[in-house]
Length: 149
Image (cartoon, rainbow, N blue to C red):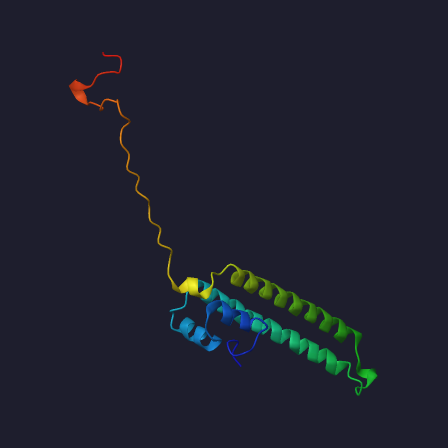
């Protein structure tokens, strides 16, 4: 199963942030029409899907090893220690991908704002006039200092 088809804990947030179902988001990414934030979000989502799958695999391995119907004589402290380390690494990876994807989604503009395009900034024009009684500035031989020289 591809990472793009594995469910993750943040799929609903992705769909809400980008305003489309995951299938459509992946179609846009494959056609290279996706925005850079969407491309990053889908890459993080793929890593999150794999990390969450690892958590599930290790959890299931530990449950099988410690099942009530298993022979307690085959339970190994070395195997349990390894599984605990593996689970710890998988949980750290899952938490980091969840945090990174969550931060990306928090900094995104709402979907409607993203579709409107960049903001249009207009520079106001200020019309000014010289204050009354101030002589115009002269250039060259006509120029005089304010003291009459």
